[in-house]
Length: 390
Image (cartoon, rainbow, N blue to C red):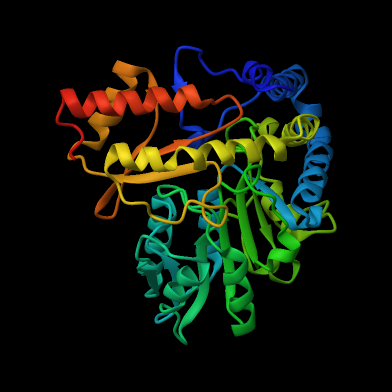
């Protein structure tokens, strides 16, 4: 399917230049239609759907997703979003006074807040190892990161692809070293599935969470939590419900605890097979590769127009379909709204620590003209307003 035809598969408004796929993704028409079919089936016969059919439907989704990310279906449970997964793990980890969670200063804010909350409750320490940008190489990142390791480190928590800075991190190398040292690893892969090929089995991560509603294009509220089988007994559900001490237990307590939680609409989870089928039918890794090329091809001009320093080499080691540059602005929210209201450009302007980042995302419906429009808008804003400083 050609790019124009792929663009027609999305439900996004034609009058908006959408450069913010990274925040919440966007559903394609065939998947959204499947979503509505499941919701209609649920409403037509709620008891039959919830009591009898839903578990089989969920099993099919787990099988399909398991094949896609290369892990056993019973090592996956569905959750609304990766932040939910971080809460499951942090709450159950039984942190003690003096324990340390090693992470970076580049992580997603909601996850930082979760770890800080549970560390404060337990007396543990959330170690946000400073990563000095610009990065020089994978080895540079790994060296910087492990300077935060101590004999008190209980778990490593790190993004596969960062949110604000849009960087692909060397998680394979991190997991390998951690395994050699006997330290648990938890990878936040919110942006990874559908953007990069994911093989959970070879990655060697102990715990992995990913969003399906971002780059896999499923309906919102569709994510997963993977836990190695030998560790699954450690993690309780956030909601204790019918799966606990079940009258009809399955072969897996992990599935019972986290999957059987009373009345909820699981339709978004059930659309995962349709999303994977859509990607396979449209040779999605070729589509993704073209998006990556467009992302990288415009990075230099983006930084030049913004007078911004590149935060990492513009290559496949660090840049996939997101590109982020630090900008100088005193009013990030106003700048975001100005871009939307005056130029119809949807793009995030994100404060992070002491910096602010402007990040574009490239998906199948985007083209060079979208980025050209952004570049013209930036030049115009710099000439006419004080929202962007040189």
